[in-house]
Length: 111
Length: 113
Figure 1 (tube, each protein chain N blue to C red):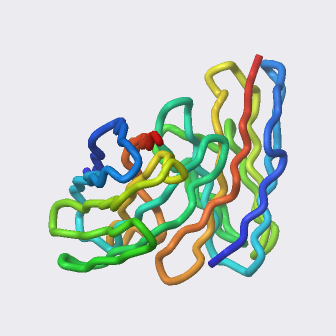
Figure 2: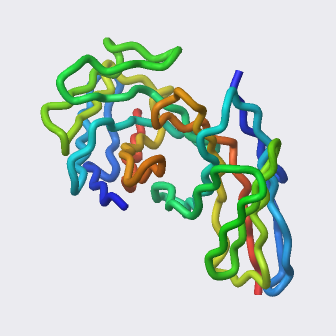
């Protein structure tokens, strides 16, 4: 069964304190791994898609990496506006555009 | 990318009634997706809506409870029927914006009292 597990469930950081969020997955053929940001009361905002092991993508203070079993979202020198829930999702080969989501990591960055 | 508009953004409904949620995409897409996000939980796919055919429902979701319409390539509706407090959730519409990326609407926050 395709599955996505995110850790930690919640993370509290001081402004400027870098850290990483983890997304472990099991899927019958990975078509893509996705990272989203979700603010309270809003829909998920697309961040990155990763397709193959070794791939990396960056956007401002965020960097996503992918291995054959997991993905990391690295946050460098975070700011309070980076506070949100970060969701990881996978798309399986043959699964058309269906996404299987993890439970998310709630990130709080304090000044 | 795709811009997706949902309405209503929120509603409070009486148990036993039904609510229809509308989703509009700014471009033509073959597939549209409806997700549910229960309080404090992640997203679960309800069904996939293809234009011109019956929606495909995931395990645990049935057409009588969540009927879906897909009249054209830019629009879909999800109805939550005969609501109970357990249906209180955020309902999200999604559509592809590229080869694999999926974009989401702002969601409909439903409270059933």
